[in-house]
Length: 410
Image 1 (spheres, rainbow, N blue to C red):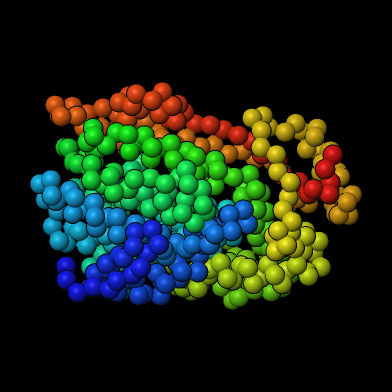
Image 2 (image 1 turned 120 degrees about the horizontal axis):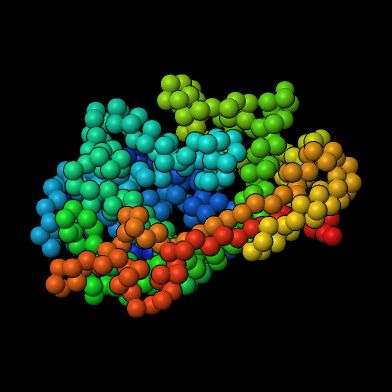
């Protein structure tokens, strides 16, 4: 790797060195620059005003942590070549490049059933052709096809550089201090045993804090009830826009947004149709926000109501409970919504709906976090921890939520 570099000033880590060469060229590429216009936490800024940070910042931060992790593992005698360092850095740099506008909301609406992981891989394959095959090793690491499996674990596992950066970054920008983790300490304690990433026993308390911080961030930020309301309203809004567009209604929007509203593309379409792929590369949060601002004045009541509520932050009332709302109460609410907005009851699903969420901070026996003891033995963190709540964190917690207009409250 060349010694010359660019320096970025990051609010989390201070000065970050970006090596020249292919990593710098990838950052400069339009596909990657698009991530500057995609927020990391979707509509969470409607709850946490500072949470306006982007996927671009996160990807840079995760790459910084990756370079530190590689250096640390080398210092413990593990052979990682310069080519492997560049490749694993590229893999983490591009791990989120397939995210669409407002991140996960797009996956559940206009780009239905196409995951950002699949699209990230497609982006890497496209870039690999453009960069004459220099991303091949990075793609193998990303797909967990490279012989050194611990390199993939650094990119995607329960203790990867992705999670380590987003917990610190999302905590910083949201102001939720419970999410702060000791990434330097954790990276310093990383080791490799039999091609598996492990954590030396001295780092066990840092891992405990990492898992607890992840649990808190999920319930307090990512699955915060008001965030849930806003994100689901956005999903419903985009679905309504797609329904209208496909019925022949001409909606305001950029050419890229209109293309995805009018069509139901599959992953194969992204692979085979260059127009579809290139249109996706031009689609970001700004396209969606500009359209929503205009849709407030559309004659369709559902589209206009949802658009106005998001722009004005008049979000749907949300109830989060252990039990699903009864069918009788849901039907009663739908009738009230139909009467209030003078719409058919079959259309009330956009404004009154229920669903569920689940979360577990740690999944034991799935790419587990193993603790390495001085005698060489390994133990899963759930068994090694003397905190009872670590075992509890491996059990999924499921909750139900019910959204409806405040003006229709029963």
